[in-house]
Image 1 (cartoon, rainbow, N blue to C red):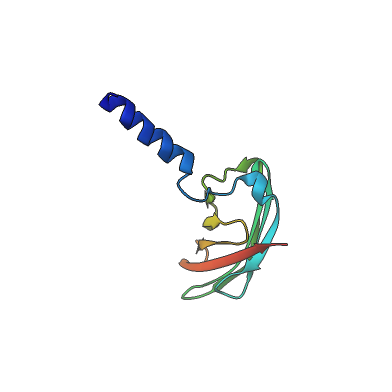
Image 2 (image 1 turned 90 degrees about the vertical axis):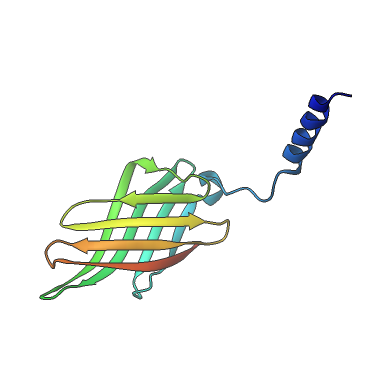
Length: 132
């Protein structure tokens, strides 16, 4: 038996073991996910087998001379891709929102940054969600 055959056998054996749990796919995650942010507001994600189709983030951004608060909903005509259980979104505008997150089969969590040009301030907070 050659060394090449032994190495190939080890590689095939390692591949057959699977290497641990796989990240959930968008199809595994399809549904509405909702939960609290660190600010006590709500985050909601609508997920289909194609990815995230809607993202709503509640926020409060305290600035030196004003506070921007409310919620922002982004609807994606081309769903936001979930890769290896994770996603990232960065929006723009007078209130710019960036959200990063990771899904397991039972929960999701991540962080968001909201920047208000009007109030000249930015804030970052964590969030968590479960599937409804």
